[in-house]
Image (cartoon, rainbow over all chains, first blue to last red; front, side, top):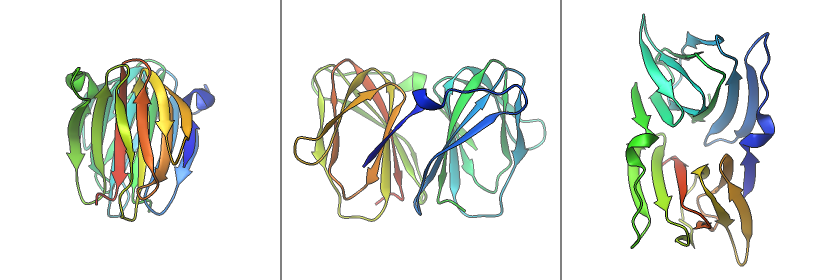
Length: 105
Length: 105
């Protein structure tokens, strides 16, 4: 039993979005990414079984997918997709996301 | 690829905390529970392998564990524990939590 506190990783970087690994186990990996307005988490995919959730915990922007797919993403929105589906995020405002990967690959 | 919106399940019930199943797959199950101030998600455990995260998305209260364990839990705090460890939540204010179980049992 351990407690993670998202208030402790609220850091941004004008050069590149910040990445914090909060938890890793055979069951799931939890990360926090913080994007400044205008920054992009590029669309990518991994050749692995499993799913990922991307939870917007602050700010807004878009969930990116295959081709031109861009779904509005506001605080409280969660994208769920397969790890091997294209996914990414673009930040309209400063934006924090919580990413859970199950199982880690 | 699908988008869950926590703004759509912001309902409370004076009789018992509300439960919403948001996503279920072989990889993880995602639920939203909404507790009114004073309500308790009783301490429990399951005889299964895996881990659970309990993310406070609104309000505050306590993460409950074995015996008298009660850790302060505010918005942005995440408890991570094994599914077979005792865990629960008590709400001091109206409180919303997002629970991720990997893998579902």
